[in-house]
Image (cartoon, rainbow, N blue to C red; front, side):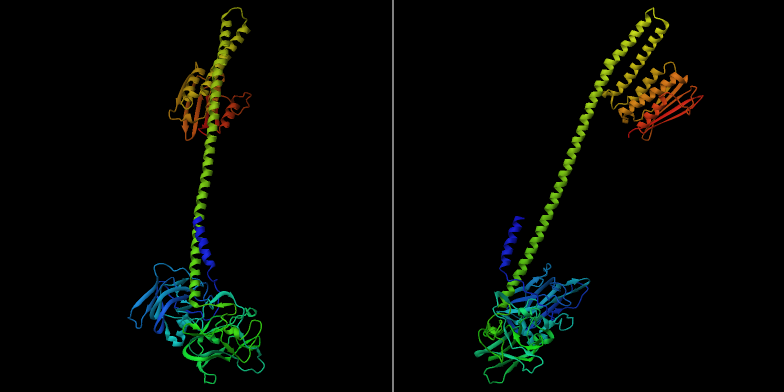
Length: 627
């Protein structure tokens, strides 16, 4: 980004030395437009014929102005093209001076594309588009102006005098005056006149406005060159004063002619005004060039059909140049006219002071080259901005990715920490259970065992009454049963047995102990995944199992008991069947046994089903393996 910023600063510094992009000139004469094609790869060409071989320093291509059908900047400019110089005849040598057929040419917008020709001699210049501009489903090529620079002259301006056949094209469409081949060399461009950076102290020449309703004579203005000089071109710069900012080409005559005389009383030679300077296609602020090889001292612009502004007839012109041998010889010469507005920036002398209405007039080659360089610099700056956006987006993606990674890492670390905390808590609870189990076994178990032994010793001794012996027997039995129950609970709590299939063994040992004297069978499924039951569920299962066996031994008067343990899907099913005398399952019982059975099963999302009759009772206990 630092490198891009440094490169951008260098380009912006160079750009600050370039002339500013000129005000967009809206003219009705847009340029040349090819036929529409369904394929963008159809070749279209346009050719300018100078009539004889001429030295060419540069070829300038300018897109049409954004007006009328020319929508957008750079309308119709070819995507791929090449420019070649041709000698006289179709089979003579061709020299390609620019080849942009390998990649699409950047849209030049409203700035010129200057192609150096190196002073090569050529009679014809051909521009061939190999890939057309495409809008929707239509492809075409369009150019606003083609200038052929030789020194400070635009040879393209001479082609209109040669005739319409001086410009040929592979195809041409559109209505005049908007589109036409000759529009390529009419001087009407989106750029306007070549102006420098020095502010103009004057506005130009203006005749004294005459009311349209009053008699008037057609105004004229004349330059006295001092001596008879050869004349190559006459350039007219329309005026554009600030008070008439909305009126491009203020005071420019509707029809006019240029009259040349060697002496004051000679019969004038008349230069026909070009189509580019006619009322049918107002020049706006664009330069109108009249050509012809003549000799003269006096150059007069004679109005034939005057310009009318706000009801007044007026002739106005910002600058009038007379070119001879590559130099403007009218600069500072005497100017004559029947009348003149000599105030507010208007004067006869302002017609030949080197200034247009807004700024100083500069030469075509340097001005166009600078604008072309501005276009290239702006394109390079655009590429830098796009690259900066790509780099920014790339690092934004990286930063977002890093943030996501950091957040994910923090979440993982937090989860691992929570897991570790849970593990530590679980291990702490394990140790606590171990201590409780050990304490129950060592302390309370030994105390209960001592109670049972004392009761046994007292029963063995003589001298107790009958009630005392009954109480001692009950104490001994309760102590023994409590020791057995505590042994079962501590066995489930001991951590070294977790994860083993000890539940079936514990069921079998409990049944053998509690059903002494009663015939019983156990059918335990070896594939039942009892280890998936949590310790809490195993404990409640054992308590419910012992509660049922206790009820059988106390109340059922059964002689046979069948116990089975199976697994169905994700449930563990314990079934206990006896052949006792049964009980009424709908009657209200005062004991807590059945209530505890249902409560413990519901605690683990399980259920208890009891079916009883005088022939026996069937109890089915269903517990899910996991919640």
